[in-house]
Length: 338
Image (cartoon, rainbow, N blue to C red; front, side, top):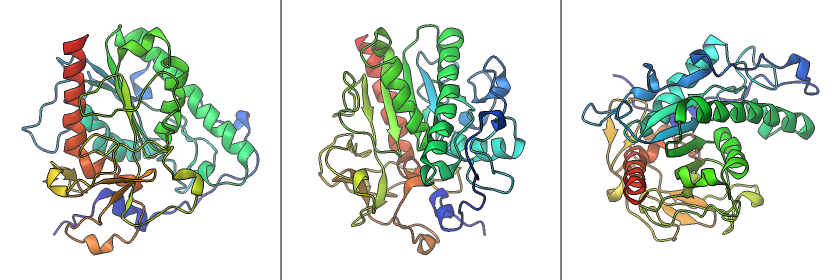
């Protein structure tokens, strides 16, 4: 029998085995991506890729007719597997790309194919160790290099693919590290902000006042705003005090408000486990609490294996259908209003 262990259970078994050593050397960095080449994209709407898949064939893939674009930035998949000793991951490594495509592109980017045309660039992502190393100078340079790729990808997206259409920005983890920086540089207070349907900045703390002109989403159909959350087992607080507190935005993905009202798992329209083709309704509840999204430990086959209290990898998968439907709602409201 195939084990129905959800994606986030993989956290129990994985670790960062290979660490970059020494200073960051630009001369050792992988070759820069060329975004005019389809190979530099993990997802494109006119090409078959994992972002096109749906866990239920009844769910629509509207990419061919959508009036909205989605720019998706994937999380860290350069996590310390054998041979991953550089500060930044190459975009032309088949094993790394297979890992990216079979995880985050399938389980996260696919959420948005009912809303818009999905574009997901490959980029020279910073090694996972960059978040934890004491070598802060090397980590900053690694993140800056990754962000330089994200900027080039977004420029190419705007100039060659988007053609002035409204768009959603969606991201998770390291993707959000770059997405919030990208939005502050390109959108916040600029004419381009008017094209923003909404942003889903998931898995990294985002201060409520991080942007000067882009407001947090406070209702399910609000547009031009941003959502953010990080999922933890109810009752748990991370050790780093700077990642918690009421200054950090938390959107409840079941009510789409920022209040601390508890929302039962009965409002959860469906989450996705390791078996992508099965939707599990009522998988998880949600409650905003002091900068975190608290979740009662989900119950599912083999859930006794879930011992971690940080549900980071499952931030989107626990609420897959709710996020999917919410993106469609905001897109429809944007088109109606503007």
